[in-house]
Length: 266
View (cartoon, one colour):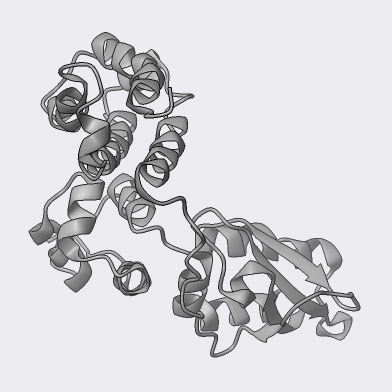
C-alpha cells in the first residue's frame, strides 16, 4: 500500500479549505480531480503526487500563515538547531492579510553561544522555505519593525482578510486576467513532456478559468462571439482527454484575445 501524504500536508489541506470556506467539491473542480479523491487524500487512504498536491494547494489558495500554524513546532525546532531563538512572525502573515504566494517574514535573535556558525545559521532560510513550501525571509534582532511580532510557538492564523474586489463582471474579468497570466510562460516542449505534469497544471488553471467564466453575468455572456463561452467552459475537459500539444499551445496563445472579447467595456 502506498504511504499516505504526511500528516502535516493533510492537515494543511483541510485547514486551508476551512480558511477559505471551500468545500471538497469546489476544491476538486478547481484542481481537476474528484470530490472522493480529495476526501481520500485528507483522511490518508490515498496519496496525492507532488504535482497534484501543488495543484490542490494552489486551488485552495493555501496561505503561509496556515502552513505555519500546522508546522509551528517544527519551525521552532529547526530554528533552534540553527542557533536562532525568540522566533516571531512579522509582516503580512502576522497581520492576517497574507495570500497564496506571499513571503513569510520571520524575526529572530541569533544566539552565538549556541555554538552554531553564521553560515550554518543562514541555512535555516532555505530549509524553512522548503518545509513551509513558501519563500521565508529572516530578519535578525536588533531590528526596527512596523506592526505586530507574533511568537511562532503556538501560532494560529488570523481570519483571512478579504481584499476589496471589483464587483460583478469587472471582478470576474480581473480574476480571469490573473489566471491567464499564469499560463504565459508555458511552452510546447513542456506540454509535450511524457510525465504530463505541466499539462495537468494547465488543465487545473483552465478549470478555474471555466469556473470564473461560468460565473460571469448573463449580460456579459450574451454579448460575446458565438461559441466563445462554451469553448472556454469545455477547454479543461478536452485537454484532460488528450488534446494534441500543438493544438493546446494554440489554445493558450488565443486565451488573451478570448478574454478581451469577454470585456464589456471593449
